[in-house]
Image (cartoon, rainbow over the protein chains, first blue to last red):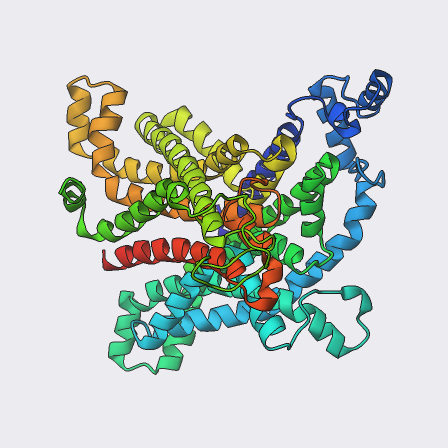
Length: 320
Length: 270
């Protein structure tokens, strides 16, 4: 078999595994959320509901049908792009999610743009200067950031930048962005908080990857031969870290998904994560299902992409 | 001393994390008994009062004693997370060792399933569980246990896989020992160190998840409190720099960062 065919097979296998995971997630999300103890219709209408109205709601929610049938119609709806109707606002879930999703992607995109280069630089620098004071300080700081819950970072950011220094507004209102200044003011706090969390995660993992390569025998050989440090990094280290670094990136960006939930609610940012938290609090199940699916799909997409890039880069390396 | 003896038997690298964990467990158990006031009692007419002799950590947004509420909050955070961690790691470890011993179909099926569970971010699973079952103590503990079990399973399976190939396992199998004996007497004692580290990490994750959920208002519900909900309810005090919001935040930071530092230091020296 040729190399390309082998690579194609490997990628196809990886995509297949992701599809299986996606199906698992869809099934799991549906069955967990339909395992509601008690009667949803009853709990939605409250104590005062008449038995007729409960029966009518049960019928309109299809609760009188078996679970398998409900799953079939729900999954069929997903395939047609129909995510159901919110139990609370009676709007279609699709229309509620649409705009929020764009806001969230904007937040995630801007954060990635800042956080990834910073984390890579920080991780690489502390790997090169490992066991110096700089490395120790970075390591301690990032360890603190990754061990505390995300909301603590957000709270601290509010305390420092909004309360003590009066630099930035504590809440993000993206509805009234008219100039670059108001854009910066609205986005800087959520992006800074989210960025801290991501940089913490990613810098640690980058350092581990870099240290692993830098302490390898071929780098030692290059050093002994008298190759310049720049050449060592560019010619010997970089080709060997692309695959693991992409893995690191995908993993950290999946932490972004967790962080975004906290950051959006702390700063009242109108994104999909705060929508999900609200829907959890009001137990609006169709909305919870859709939001959970969107997050899981994003997570799967990131990990799959990372694995495929890893496959490509190992292919390149074995050819060279 | 009765307490120091079993500690000495542990490898010196594990002593610091174990001592830190024991300290927090002691606070968790003793907290409600040494608290100066009742957790729901309004003891002062000033809200967000600063540190004083009467109220060591001031008062909260309703004029309740912060120290009391902090002790109760620490107690529920630590105990709930410890319970979830113990459940998750016991189930994960035993399933992992079983998978490593049996291999074949059992191993494949279990591992596929666990990979599936891992592919859902933890905060999301937590939110979905709360949306479905409501937020009560059993739901939170069980949800956290289910969320962190696959990670523990993976670690233990990897560790056990390398042990299973050793000669003494073969010898025990030749003697005709049962799977239960192999797991408890042969495999487990040979991986205690790494497994305990893993337990420590899962505990930190659990504390983060529970605090995050409570901070979002979907974790523990009033009148119960934990460190996350204490931070949330006193968030307004941030403007005054009140100890009511700083104390619980600091407590979470000490708990998670302290334990993580100890575990990290251990990992580095090995």
